Image (tube, rainbow, N blue to C red):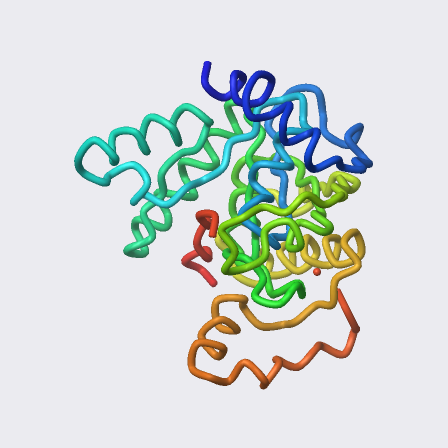
Length: 253
């Protein structure tokens, strides 16, 4: 299987050599059963380094465009992304967004490890941004624990705009699983889903040590693109809380 070949034959061993990692909290990932790995997102490299250190297979959502491009290049892309365990999501409409969440819920119920970035996109400046509530909907409907995952230093390996990966030491921190069974049956309640998402982001803030910004990362990127990068979004009063494909915001949000 391509996933295991890349992990243990090529390029996995090379990545372990060039990018040594201090990994803590692996014992927080259950040996079996569905689990949601909710991580901060500093670089494209996050989706490679984290699964490399987890013994179980990790499945990530991926942009549908990776699976639908025509021609030989498109077929190779589809083969690669399918082989490494990613599944396509269509973000073009509300119904498509729900379909993506439904697929994620099904995979977790089947006992998979689902990797997801609640911020929805890479941080534009190394800070932790507001989470989208799709992760809460998945947690509620799958009844699976959420393990926060903090990536530290990957933005130095793979800086935004760089095509090269620079040899650096990184750190991966797996936090204590979060149990949201107390909210069972409340999927679709936008206040509950926001509360759960904020709890996940707070855990990521504490685990990563990042400064938290109560603004969506996508909005921050829009401001930068509009030439307003100097206007940094305000930090909430509580202090610092923390493009791969994204699971969209829950429709109820």
